Length: 234
Image 1 (cartoon, helix red, strand yellow):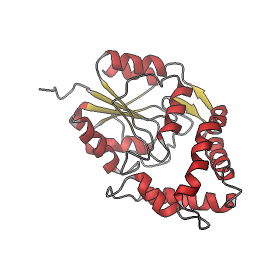
Image 2 (cartoon, helix red, strand yellow; image 1 turned 30 degrees about the vertical axis):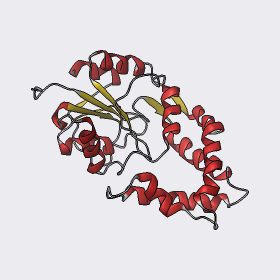
Image 3 (cartoon, rainbow, N blue to C red; image 1 turned 120 degrees about the vertical axis):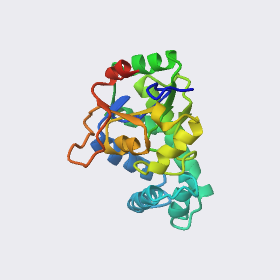
Image 4 (cartoon, rainbow, N blue to C red; image 1 turned 135 degrees about the vertical axis):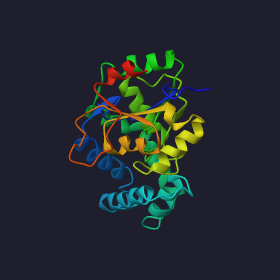
């Protein structure tokens, strides 16, 4: 029987937690580059507008469909073009141009050490990043963070998730997949949307970053400190 106090799984947020990211530059540049990948078919302005609407639809996902399906139903068709016609250009963008965004990120010195020690302790490791991008985009960011080669139990992404942070359904789905009681899980992140996991019984650990908005109402974290301080509570 699992003890009330034993952490058996850690859910790691990615941006701001395992890797430093300047979101004020990363997000606008991402939207610009992605929209330019289909500029010969659709105006970048229209693509960005549709991307934002589709992202909002994902935020409202009630769990009945994957985030990918919700996104596609809102985004396509665009300018009369179907997903089958547009998707190859998006795929090419992620293959060739997404890496240009690396310049807005910086490795966290202790990230690899922390993940490695967690796995050495036989604790399940999950990458619980906002699931609005395809797996390849998340894997590339894990590579930039220097933590891509670990055996994660789960990496959330747009194709395998049916909700988005801070919807508690997102966390409930992860807990259900793990088959581990929420009380034995620790959510590590840098924003309020990570700390809400405490509302379903998870312990939480706040790692402050440049993205942490302390003006937002935030569920009080169980712990807070530097990323490496996580190891002190295991």
